[in-house]
Length: 430
Ligand SMILES: *Cc1c(COP(=O)(O)O)cnc(C)c1O
Image 1 (spheres, protein in one colour):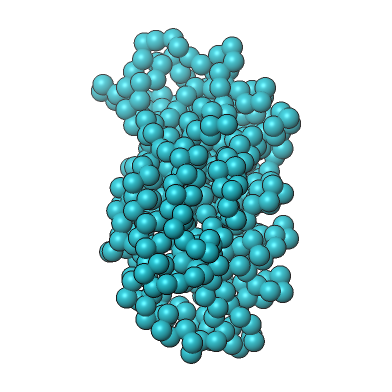
Image 2 (cartoon, protein in one colour):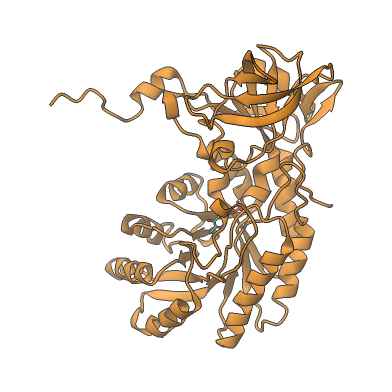
């Protein structure tokens, strides 16, 4: 099986209606309302399986990066297939606890873990989690004190910053010398020297993650080579090697390496290591991005000089990526409209920000009008998980289309009332 990452791998037109597993997305929009996130179980499962297949000849654990999409039902699917998880907060750990994910399948990343998050992870599931990815010398000291106070041992990997340019968007590059992420070689050496005085930390391996939406193997190869080169040079024989996530997907015309090519690179990279460590990877985007779409309804059409604007009911509150990174998402009408004439069109949301434009300068049919549904493609990763209440907007619903064609609503739409009563007390009298 060749796992690709195309926006229409799991959603396709039948008789001019956008469908998935025989389910009409127009019908979903009508039943559940818009904006609406729709996910394909098959899309996620095929990618998970492809990662597994490509690493089957070695000892490995796929640790899905929860921040890409943290819906409990999606996490449950992954757990049931045997996946591990990479988390970046206590909130994400709580989600995994709810699903009874074993601690042996969890690694914890992030530059700013608090002492309460450390405590939560050390006390998780009796023996704590598989590994904390350490990002600084101070963090290691802090983790050690927390572990000592609990009389626990914290298993750690050291996040190596290999000083590699991932050639991706600067906002999602993490392996540069100038980035806040990871430890430089000299800091790792200092930590290694200090470890004997930190008996509550147990070194398990190195970790490397140089960024996201990486569309060529080159920077990954460079990062792996440098990391493994460092292990060899220091004669470090450690049980784990965490190679991070970052594999890119096709949003527009990108041609990222396949999961198979990525796996082959990993196998080649670890060839010279003896004994072979257990390899962890942390895919997020590549697991879910193209398995999800965001449905939105057109509210208004505006003419402005040479350009038209379609104002839709989704916005940067539901899908932040275009406003945050200027990222591209393909947009298609759910009922295929090949009728011309076509006009250069911006698709914009109702939020009061100039950057609340979901798509710019697209050729869209002039016949599209208020009430029609559009599908914004490749929204499975960093879509719902980045959604906010900005402009006091309620969070949207999410549905999952099972491989059988059964549809499950995996998040109810938030009501306006819930946006008011969530947690805050607005009317404090002084
Ligand atoms: C965000 C993140 C990932 C996932 O990255 P993707 O590009 O979504 O695969 C993996 N590891 C770490 C440490 C991360 O911060």
